[in-house]
Amino acid sequence: MDRAWHFLGSSTLQSLGKLTLREDAWRLPTGAERRYPVLQVGLTVGVVPFVDREHVLLIRQFRHLARETSWELPGGGGQPGESPEAAAQRELREEGGHRAGRLLFLTRFYPSNAYLDETAHCFVGLDLTPDPLAADDDEFFERRVVPFRDAVAMALDDRITESVSKVALLAAALRPDLLP
Image (cartoon, rainbow, N blue to C red; front, side, top):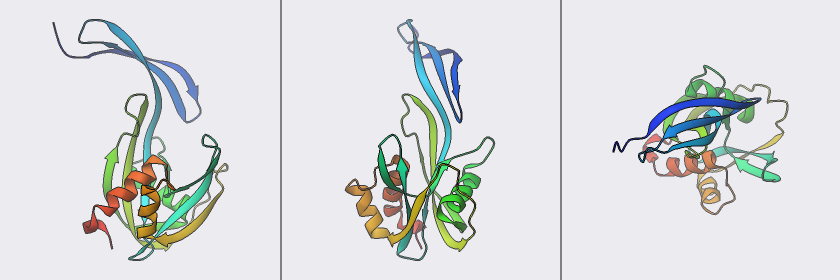
């Protein structure tokens, strides 16, 4: 018996604005066929923006799924054809009001590789200069500069729960070679 998984195909079930719900068909190592729902999200980015050697910029915005406000790093979804670096700069400008003079790759991960087709790319943003872009029409947020140490503590004690922000902050804490 062949022990490999074999991809049989995908079919789109529904387009949902920026998202697509699809179903992937696979032949399992046992020979059985199974279909799996997948929510296509695509590229996601997050930036740990250092305003100086010891402080980072956080944003707080309402998240309808959690039904509460959420402290997060500037970040969001990439646009079609946009590189992770370009998406990170755009999101930093839209949400953080700044452009990074240096954008350093931090880590990449899959927020939920069972049912989400999403890849998160995280960066450290250094040498910030004011360069705001208009926020999306459904984004309303507060910006706050906090000590990096406090932001990491917020990720550890669940005051920050959003996955890209949590992973990026904890990864940055483990990579002092990338910090200012």
